[in-house]
Image (tube, rainbow, N blue to C red; front, side, top):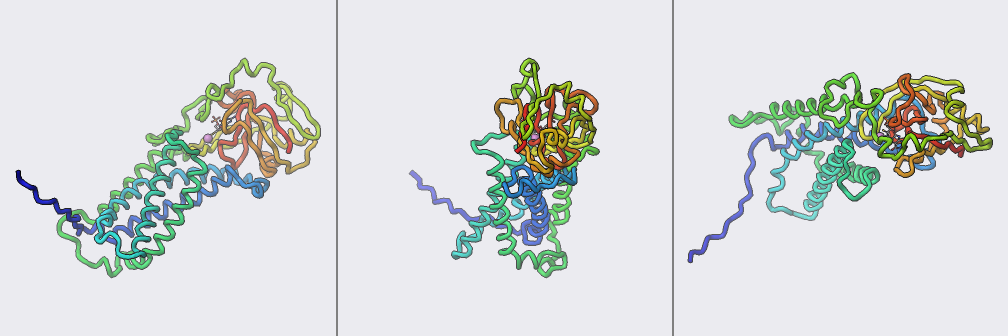
Length: 381
Ligand SMILES: Nc1nc2c(c(=O)[nH]1)N[C@H]1C(S)=C(S)[C@@H](COP(=O)(O)O)O[C@H]1N2
Ligand SMILES: [Mo]
C-alpha cells in the first residue's frame, strides 16, 4: 500500500493590476456613491411610509412628485449597485487568501468588519431586488429588516472607508504614486474593466428604469413591472381578487365618515359633490411609478363636512377584510392639500375594481401603499 504525500495547500498568488488598490478604489467609489444614494433615499422612503408619531403630522405633501423621484432613485441606485458590488468583490477577493489570515487583533477586527460589510451589502441588494418582484422567500418581515440592515451596512461602510482612507487617498486619482507602474504586457487593462463595469451599470439601468421613468418605458425589458401594463393603463399591485373584494360584496356600499358630525354617502351622492381632477402618480414602494388623472371629491371637503378643523389627521379603512394596507393614517399636511382626493375615476373612467372601485385615496408625495383602495370608512382623528 502506498501512502500518498499530504497535499500542501498553497494560497494562490495574484499579481494582476485588476486586483490592486487602484482598481479597488476606482470601482469602490462608484459603488460607494450608489450605496450612499440608496441609503439616503431608503431612509427618506421609510419615514414617508412609516413615520414615528412625532413626525406623522408634519410630513410634507409637496413636491407632489417627491416620493416618486425618491423611490425611483432608490431602486435604480440599488440595481446599479449589483454589477458594481460584483465587480468590487471580484477585484478584492484575493484578500481572502492573505496569509497569515489574522496578524493582530486590529487585523482581525478589520477583517470582521469587512465580513459584516459584504454580508450586509449582499443581503440588502438581494432582498431589495426580490422585493421589486414582490417575492418574499424568507420568514421575516421585509421592511423592518431591510431598514435595520441598511444602518448596519452604512456603519460598516463608514468604518471601511475610514480604515482604508490612506489607501483610498493614495489611489484616488490616476496620477497617484501607487499607479505609476507601466501596464502589464499581458492581461486586460484597468480601463477596459472599468468600461465594462460602467457599461453593465448602464445596461441594467436602462432596461429597468422605465418602470418609474416612464419616458423610457419602452426600454423597460427587465423590470418586473411595465408602467403601461394593467387595467386603465395602470399596473395593479394587489388585485381585488387577492383582497377578496367583489362586486356583490359592494352592494349597498356607502362611504361612512365619522367625526364631530357623522354622515354616510352613497356613490351617487359622492358623485354629486363638487368633483376635482388632479394628475398624480402611484409610486409603489416596490419600485414602479405611473402618473394618472384622478377625479373625485377633495378629502378637505369631506373633512370639513364632518365638522373637523383644517389640519385634521384621518384614519381610512378599506373594505378589504385583511391585509397589511387595509387601514391607513394620514397626517394633516395631506388632508389639507387640495390635491388629496377620494377618487371615483381614473383617466376619465369609473375606477375598475382592481384600482379600488367604488372609491380610493390618491394623495401627493405619498408611497403607493398608502393610496388606499376600496375605501369604506374615513375617521376624523
Ligand atoms: N386596500 C388596499 N389598498 C391598497 C393596497 C392594498 O393592498 N389594499 N395596495 C397599495 C399599493 S402597494 C399600491 S402600489 C397601490 C397600487 O394601486 P393600483 O393597483 O391602483 O395601481 O395601491 C395601494 N392601495
Ligand atoms: Mo405598492
